[in-house]
Length: 107
Image (cartoon, rainbow, N blue to C red; front, top):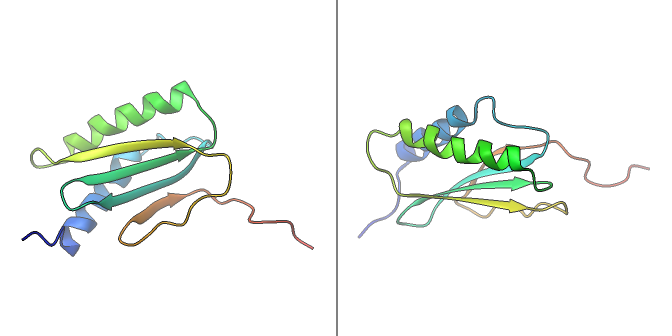
């Protein structure tokens, strides 16, 4: 029975995501998450608008992330374009990057 990744594995993969993202984030990136579904790592990107250059950066990210692994590591990379309010991340998903945004009007 698999209980999922341990804390060391979570921390290793969190750092791997951060290293693979170095230099790739444009102002269009709103959120980057890391999760695990029991069988594979789930890496999520939320973009504000569709952008071919950002999509290419995400493809390059996948190669960079794979290179940081000690062997084959099952993963799925998901990209969502969402200009509206960001969804809250549900446990155990980790938000590794979130762009600072105005939450609402100030009085």
